[in-house]
Image 1 (cartoon, helix red, strand yellow):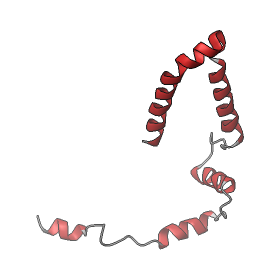
Image 2: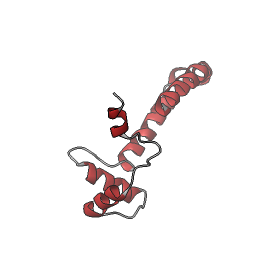
Image 3: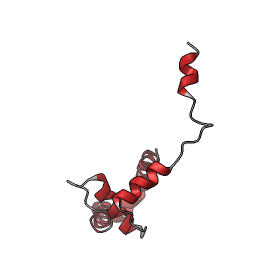
Image 4: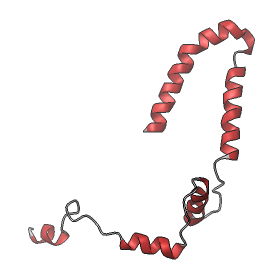
Length: 101
């Protein structure tokens, strides 16, 4: 939803500002967009990790390094997930639901 909103706002801004940019820069108006695309490509290549042929755990560890979060071993992470208890208020009891039929 956030990406869609940013996309619509960006399209609105381009549609609103492009006539003024074209008036000032004339045939060089698209250089503004070349700069934006170049900066986006640099950010993509430098900041975001490559995820091709990597497991979810490898990707998770890559983002943990980027965000400076202490890494957990797979065993510690599994233990943490299994130790979490569901909230009984939000999860309905299946046995009560089945017995009412």
